[in-house]
Length: 232
Image 1 (cartoon, one colour):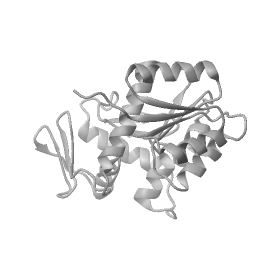
Image 2 (cartoon, rainbow, N blue to C red; image 1 turned 30 degrees about the vertical axis):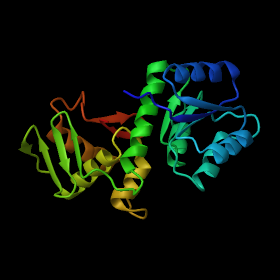
Image 3 (cartoon, helix red, strand yellow; image 1 turned 90 degrees about the vertical axis):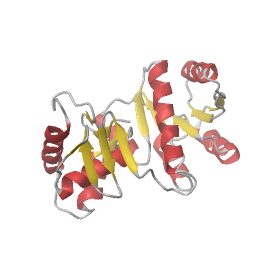
């Protein structure tokens, strides 16, 4: 098996954490680029076009959200925010601002590597043409996007139109946390008079149809205060 040579840009001003991340990635043969501030990070991105960006929010020269905003002006590169900020609002703002994922410090090596693998799979999943897979298939749950069919262990599952749209949206972004606001806008439109309650009701109905134990979901997870994530 060939070793990976993905390049990861680390924008982190705390030297100890930067060294820790770099050591983790070097052990798995990732190439790394280091920046201790936002301006340098943006310059390195423009010069090297890494496959993944790890972005701290508390930078010395500018807020990490501003760096994220500038990256999103010209690139869809996966950006994983790594921050000590633990408030739900901070996480939601980062995800709504274009981040693909959010890791709270402190974190373990395996968690970091898993998040990076997921980000890279999303990048590959879209492909150069932007065409997505025609089907989602995980642990007996199959969603055929072209036929708009959902089956669970070979048996058809009847979903309402809204339920199917929700499942399809999450499945097409499997492994990625989608915020409540993002889901509401995608399913009901940006001007719909809806709130999180209607979303929770629909998700509860979907779980009753798909999960063996809705209280301990296997396919559709709640990121409390942030949104939902589908099994990757």
